[in-house]
Length: 103
Image 1 (cartoon, rainbow, N blue to C red):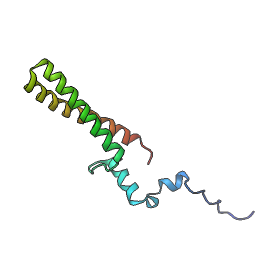
Image 2 (cartoon, helix red, strand yellow; image 1 turned 180 degrees about the vertical axis):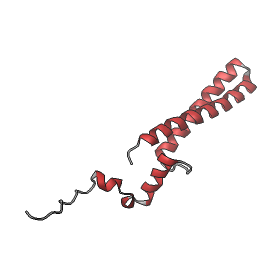
Image 3 (tube, rainbow, N blue to C red; image 1 turned 90 degrees about the vertical axis):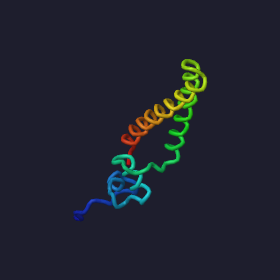
């Protein structure tokens, strides 16, 4: 009863998770990739999401460009525009998801 020290925290508590020294190297790398940037994202789920998004936008851009401008030139320009648009849009979505992830 006269012990002034508080009881130990249970494993997995929020105080332990916020301690940077308690992170594994992979968790530390993912934290830097999500919150700070400047390093490649190595999460397979994020990379698959971005690849599928860019592929779908490239196909749609090629179809729309081929139908409106002309077959070869329109399809190539539309596909290029789809790749650029899909990369920017999926990157924006992944940036927002990364900032909102609990680390």
